[in-house]
Image (cartoon, rainbow, N blue to C red; front, side):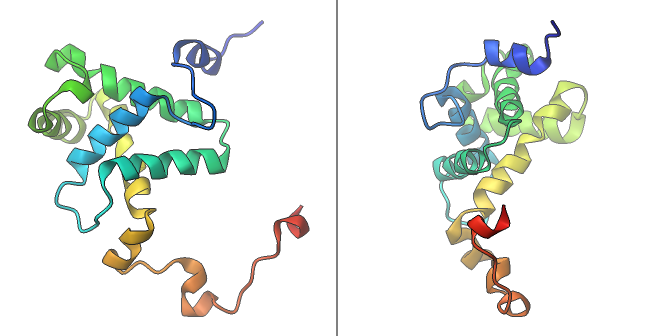
Length: 159
């Protein structure tokens, strides 16, 4: 029998509540990252809504690789214990900002480089929010003039 990283991850990661893609601690980690990364951005989506948007995306996509997102969030939560003496979500906001600037942006070595990938999730959650499009000028593809004439077949016809 071959044991994969996915097998180990499912044994180590916290159990999920029904209908959830992220455990509560993972969701809080994403909220804490979003608070720092989105400070001063032009959108109005609060950080908890950003985390909800990411979770909704994971649920809708039914990705078999969502466990990788969960592992990433656990790494972001626990890796700061080594250099900063505390979990990411417990650090004060300014300390979280310093960690991101020093380790994710400037240093970018080893596991810190992996942690920096969480920025993509925050961008997905922030700009995937309906209110963000209006503030940034983003027009969803189906509403763009050159695509308005196209229609998508019903799901029953695609299969």
